[in-house]
Length: 317
Image (cartoon, rainbow, N blue to C red):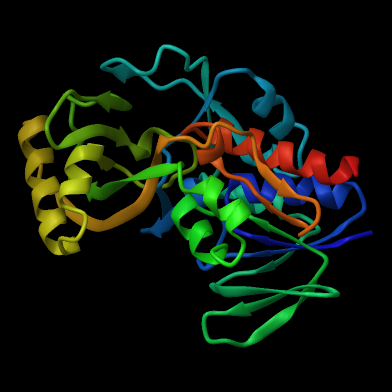
């Protein structure tokens, strides 16, 4: 049995954690956030939930859906058949959502796994007996045999600079940002369906969060900005970005309502621009691995495939 530290509580990291735990290894998952989710993050609002990360999971091969429906998260997953306005990706076969929020999927995957939230890993230290992890305050968190890094490529690179053989391979994986705004209206907007996709200079997608099961709030919409616009406005304040997205929402919907901006969130590393081109990275001598959606592409299914691939490599040894 190996003692394995996993940095990142998104879908890639938790998939790896589930598989390794099932194989008899001891796993500890760390995340800088208060909860799990990564791209599947959610926030509470008015006794309900808003998914400000990926609005839904898209299925391409069917492998991830089959896995999740047999996993500890199975009771937290339902199919969703939204009405689309605009053109979704042609390879999106079906959609899944979590209930009562998308982050419930990753929370379900944590069953039986030790989790340390609100813990930002500041550095790694390789010793003769394994790995020592320190938080960003330089406090020692413990010692592990193996380390898996399952966070966006720029953040992974920052932890791996002392090991250029693996760090150098990560540099080719580039990521792009995305600004997101959650907006509440005091009345329904008949001009919007469940998922609205735009060819627009600012707005890429508006999702009717309230259309999803068990969200327990009405007339809440999540506005996702275009990647190019998000990059150009990456360092602007949330107030300025929120005001712009709110104005664009009003102009696009042309609805007779009074919209209220609930919150704005900047995903600095939202989408993969240039993937690594490998399912995962694993150095058997260092006992150090890396996984994430950015290894293969930009979807949740890519994150799942990467986490599975890394876990299987470790288990096979």
